[in-house]
Structures are given as C-alpha cells and as structure tokens.
Picture (cartoon, rainbow, N blue to C red):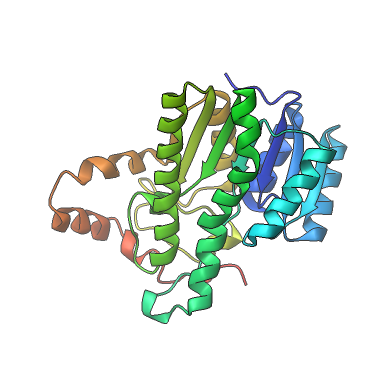
Length: 269
C-alpha cells in the first residue's frame, strides 16, 4: 500500500475544493504537503489549517497553465522540499456552454489548465521518480472523461485526454519495469463552486457528490494503489454501454438526465 507518512505530496489546485480536503487528510496521516495554487490568500489559510493539526506544508503560488512558471516553481520545490513522492494533478477549470459559444481564449485556457499542465508538472518531476524507481501519480479526471456531456465539450475533451494519459503512463512504467504507480479519478459532478447549479434527475443513481466524500474516497484509493476510481459506481457501467449502438448509449444518457445536467449551470464566478 502507498503510505503518506513522511512522504512529499504535491497537490496542484490545492487551496480549495477537494484539493484542500485531500491536503488536510494527508497532513493528518503524516504527509509533507507541497501545495500549488494561484490564490495566495487561500494557500495561506490552508497552511495555517495544516499547521493546526501539526502538519508540514510548503506553499507556492503557481499558474499551472504557464509552462515556464511550472518549471520554475518545480526547481524551487526541489531545492526547498526535496523530491516528490506522490503527485496529485488536481487543478482544473470548467466552462459550461455550447461549443459554438466558446471564445478561443476559453478553449486554450481550459486545455492549458486541465491537460497541458498535467504534462508540464509531470515532465518536471518524473525524471527523479524514474531514477529513484518509485512514486505515485494521481490524475483527477472526471466521469466526463468517460462519457461526453452536452455543454461540456472542451472540458470533456481535456478529461478524455487525462484518462488516456494515465493509461499510457501505466503501461509505459510496467513495460520499463518501473515501480511507479498511477491512479486516475473519474467522479460525477461534485458539489463545489466549480459546478455550482448542475442538477441530476435520479440522485439515487447519479448523485451530486459531496466533496468530503470524494476526497476521502480518493485518499483510500491512493493508499490501496487502485488504478482507477469512478464515483458513483454507476459510472463504471459506461464502458459496457459502449458495446451497444451509439443511439442506445445516447438514449440512456438522456433518460438519466445527463445531457440536461448542465442546463442550470452557474459555475464559479
């Protein structure tokens, strides 16, 4: 099992939502946190919370959408905190509207944060993991990385890529004989400001997930070295539904209200 005790754990997008909750949980288990976010005040508050539970945290204001900023911050982290044992690529953004209404800037920013940042952060820290033959890479993807959803075209594209990235890394490490673990997380909508306003038709099948629940499940999945975690369990059925005609998959998604879920979307202002 993966242990957090005395391990350097880097979390991107750490200052709010499930990033913050995971950081607090890991601190209580004895992990040393390296926290990245663009919000300086939120980072400071989180550091104080971690200190209050006798945890250790290094905080860095970092815009992960900027490649050079990622590399520069990684260099400082290695000098101040040391090598990374567990990397949780969590930072994410969402724009919820029909693709025709996206601006080029919104498309680029979404892909830069949700996908390209994964590449740059891992590119900065993977060589040390490969040399040490140890590490754990956690990719916070989405159920939208398994099933495309109306009004989430660019977000879904980035999350499908996240899932594919994780799968390729897993096979590469195995082929190279490296003991580097990977875990991909694919949750349905989480009740944070990021997806404020979304709705569900059948909450007993596809509930809007509580962030505390999701964070606790992710921590358990990492500790148990699970390769994939989908929440709720209903999400695991999507690959099976792809065995049927596309029209059937679409009908099921419509029946469950998935393609109407984003209609009342407000998001984080």
